[in-house]
Amino acid sequence: MEIRESIVIGAGQAGLSTSFHLRRLGIDHLVLDANDRPGGAWQHRWDALTMDDVHGVAELPDAHAPARDQKRANVVVPASFADYEREHDLPVIRPVHVDRVRDDDGILVVQAGEREWRARTIVNATGTWTQPFLPHYPGMETFLGEQLHTVDYPGPEHFRGKRVLVVGGGASAVQFLGALAPITDTLWATRREPIWRDDDFTPEAGAAAVALVEQRVAQGLPPQSVVGVTGLMLRPQEREAQRLGAYADRRPMFQRIEPDGVRWADGSFERVDVILWATGFRPAIAHLGPLHLRSDAGGIQLDRAGRGTTAVKDPRIQLVGYGPSASTIGANRAGRTAAIGVQRALQAVSDGRAVTVSAG
Image (cartoon, rainbow, N blue to C red; front, side, top):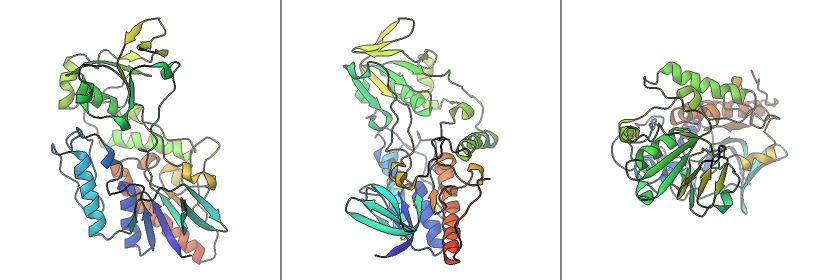
């Protein structure tokens, strides 16, 4: 069976950026994507999300970012990704649902059902969208209303006339409240007091947020949200919800869920028809389990004190869209870094050297 120099798993922003840079370096590779068509996680976003609503989509290498307008993000971004794959002749194969990656006497074997591919290096670009995080609260299985996660969000009209509890302290929760409060009754619950900012999001603030994630992955800890550093901001389309008091009425997390609502530790009760869990995602890396990349702290430690993309436990593995590169801008930068990491690992094999990397 043919042995590729590298295989990229995932064809979202990070995977396409990596493939571009691998091709530029002349590295033979394939990109395996689980979706039926181009677009990464963007194709699964709700119809009501417009390009003007998203925080921004960075341009892919040697390309322009899609325009900010009222067009649907789940149409515009996938179309731009499809154009990019075609224009740069990227070697994407789909749909391929990777089940596991294992080592076979120094060769990495990527398995997807009965199919498999072999490679000397792997770039994991699977992101987080397929791993929604849903915390468990006592009684949640008894709730008679709807429970939806961000991945299931059908758009605001679905909730008209219903009492909706939005759970979560991140940007998605703020956006949901902005869309829902003007048309229906909402409640908001978070684990921590929200941190708001009304100034510009400066480069210094961005650097501080990234540094926080870098510090965690450098220690082998799982990445976490950086909202505590960046703070929450209200966009113009969320000002009406603010006027209606949707953000001022924030409550701490409830203690338990009952069939028709939620109950707090002080005994107070609120009836709700829907619980909308805006509780984030976790990295989709279960298929890498056979490689034993996790540290004792539970995450995958990356090189260069968390600023790189190379797995410290196995330098043949690059992770993009993980930790500090889990943004469209970070994913682009990580694509170039990962391609160079692949080149370095291949050169070490060619020279007959062990592939090593410093954690510092």
